[in-house]
Amino acid sequence: MPINYYQKDIETMPREQIRALQEEKLKKQVKHVYEHVPYYRDLMDKKGVKPEDIKTLDDIQKLPFISKYDLRETYPYGMLAVPLKDCVRIQSTSGTTGKRVIAYYTQHDVDLWEECCARAIAAVGGTPEDVVQVAYGYGLFTGGPGLNGGSHKLGSLTLPMSSGNTDRQIQFIQDLKATILCCTPSYAAYIGEAMKEKGIKPEDNTLKAGIFGAEPWTEEMRRDIEKSLGIKAYDIYGLTETSGPGVSFECEEQHGMHINEDHFYAEIIDPETGEVLPEGSEGELVFTSLDKEAFPLLRYRTRDLCVLTSEPCSCGRTFIRMKKPKGRSDDMLIIRGVNVFPSQIETVLLNEGYAPNYRIEVDRVNNTDTLDVYVELTPERFADTVSEIDKMERELAGAITNILGIHPVIHLVAPKSIQRSEGKAVRVIDRRKLHD
Image (cartoon, rainbow, N blue to C red; front, top):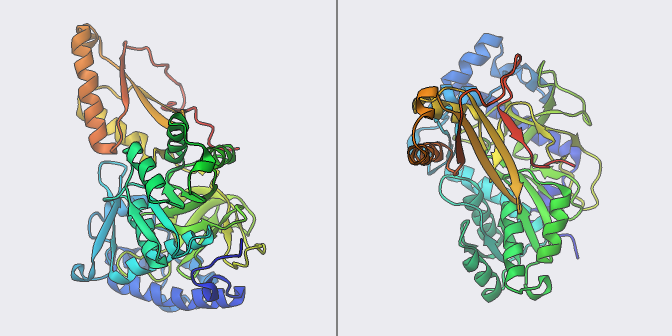
């Protein structure tokens, strides 16, 4: 298969030109943020740094970090860097205390984001001849809108399916001869299983490639999906805070994701000290949006732990690659593509009148994430009848679903039945084998 690009001149730019472009954009972006985001200007002033102090890429280390804490503190408009009338869209992800992270986009921001996604689709062989079936969720989440826009930019026929309704997904794959599937890896695996149950063999469908992200997945799961659907399965990475999927993407080599370095500058830091680590070191990934207008984050701490490499890639792209994240430096879980913090669940429990004695168990059954929450009852409540406890479980599940957007299974258990710890409480048991 010939190597396919969307913007070859940019994607194969010499490394020194990439760095020169990043340096030029960084200086402009720091000035833009300093002048238009009072919150970040205060952070810079506290560190004693001014825009004119940023003369080279290495000077980025003088700038303060931004984290989800800052996004909560400034909700909803405090990080906005343009007048609201210049914004054409928001996207959103769940926040840690019920406050969602809201990202704003000018039309320019949307265009750049969609170009990044078009590069990702082209990297898996996508052309205007392809039929791209987008089965990520639409609405506030970024998966559906991002890949939808990227497919449009590329000129492919786009099927805006959203997630769910698997029978219809399979019908459209067959009837409209879809060639590229975009969704979470767990949903891709489920579609593969559903096809098998219907007697549809991998060689009977027209799919050739899949772009799967929004949740952790292993190489073993990749191979299973490739076998069940008869495709090559590619990884994609993104954050709502920096735009959405397309911050980085895999090429045909399937060995790390190329970061779109003309739009994002990546660093790896020690999560404890904040010190920038040399290339090849494992640490926390930090991103700076180099040309986003409405919601430009400088040195945003992703909490994802990974490694960067600029070793040459056989695809010819010169963008640095990030290896698949190996975990996180905080307690966030990604369940069915949704960011879940134990603190969100704890907040609901307290609001509903329960004691904060609970355990969260996450597993993956038939390639689908499960979420079980065990909550201790007080002695008074434990005396209630079975029917009353069933009702309480349903109500609590509904309250948690309203916050998380995904449905948990609630188990109300006897007082003191959840093991206590003398040290840090073990609130989460994750039985998924997410890393090789």
